[in-house]
Image 1 (cartoon, rainbow, N blue to C red):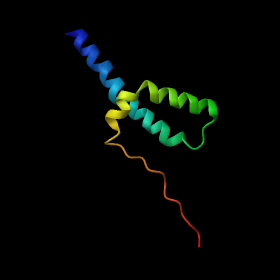
Image 2: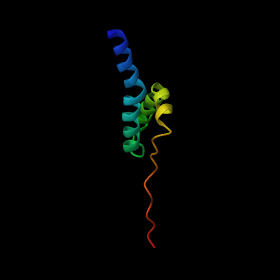
Image 3: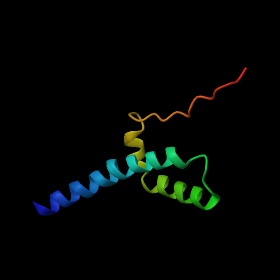
Image 4: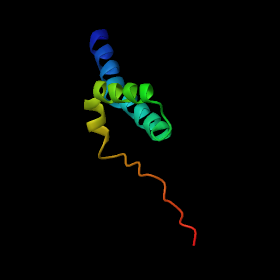
Length: 70
């Protein structure tokens, strides 16, 4: 029973918690990162890809609307 609980907790962290935290991190830092940090971001997206696919239909982070001065 303990092994099943451990697998559930680790699976939930891998498929839900870490991808959600990664979405928030990407949203906050996407336009201001250095090249090394961007490479690290790509690695994390590759690492947590199944969870990113699982959350993608429910999360929609669009860029902020630009204000055009007339």
